[in-house]
Length: 293
Image (cartoon, rainbow, N blue to C red; front, side, top):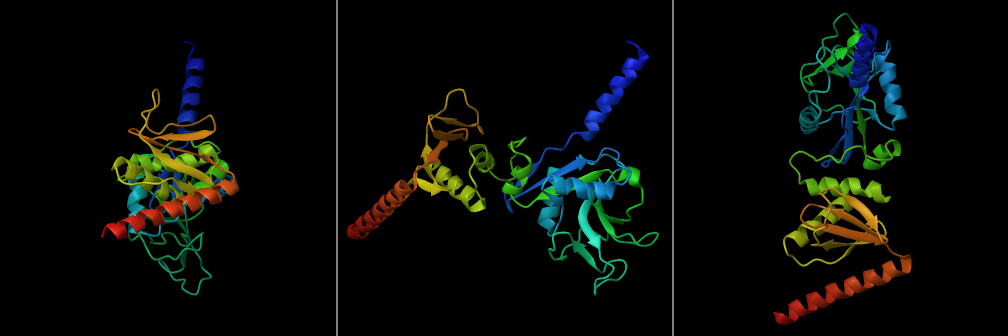
């Protein structure tokens, strides 16, 4: 192979591997989505990181608890390459009444209280290090905007809801599983965008409860979530794998590996009737239980 062609291919491969986003990851505890993105060799990386976050309907990450710190480190480890670091949403406000060096006046871009620090991160080395970064080990460090710009080439992003995330990513690139939680819950969470529903964490929990009740052979009734009726189905859907979601004959399906959920929009009057029927059934069941006693 011609040496110049080979060199060009190497450059292209390196460019693609460096600029490819990490896999966005969804945390069920707070309903937030996180990602770490390479800035492409920007000569002015912090403004580039802020702009990137804004463009993607996110903000630079804010880490307010030890649980969040541990979770981000476990889910996004290995993405920040050696010698590099990622910008966060932590800044030191020199006009703050609490300002002092090196630990006074630190704030999050979201206005969340600064009540947690991961390590003794601030030393104000060289004077006025007013921005917080994450090293590859996810240890915190303070830095200045002009310091080591060539190795400050990642942005740690956070979306405060699935809706905010999907406002930029119309099709989620990954069905992700929250570490320590059943995969079924994550599959349900990411199905909402596929079908065009506006699910929040309460809706996701309601549907997951419906699924687990069916799996445990408990009594369960259809539920109404975001204008649609959902029911548990113990059908094994041939040709489908866990996490698949699709629409067929006006019905939305979520296959969760051993069984699934089936749902669909219903007209408003029908919703009222169904709610009435559901309430009547619940009253009837309660009355029978009382009579049996």
